Image 1 (tube, rainbow, N blue to C red):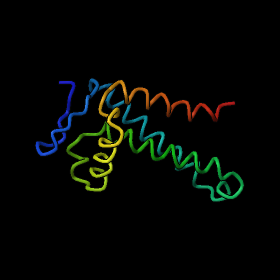
Image 2 (cartoon, one colour; image 1 turned 90 degrees about the vertical axis):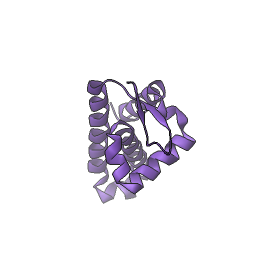
Image 3 (cartoon, rainbow, N blue to C red; image 1 turned 120 degrees about the horizontal axis):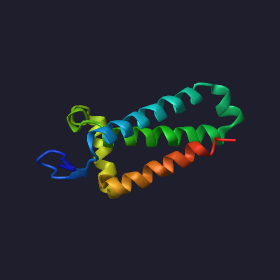
Image 4 (spheres, helix red, strand yellow; image 1 turned 180 degrees about the vertical axis):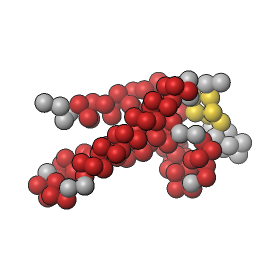
Length: 118
């Protein structure tokens, strides 16, 4: 179905898109993380452009969030740090459990990247 249950004990449901869209969203999250980490790899950036460095840090955090919500739940449950982070987000940012809520979040991430376009 459109839902994936996060363990019988927790009973939380996360809406999931069809497989193809889910894989695309996961790939976009991973690609965003790789690009942001690459841009952060230059320590001079932190000194001369600290605001950009902070923005890249936010993008990394948002990219990890995207990947966690689109990844196979079995894998997330096997890594306690990711599972705990996902549970914290579900408690504090419930809109991420809905496809529409995550869609708006993904659009927000896209606008962050578009802010670098000239």
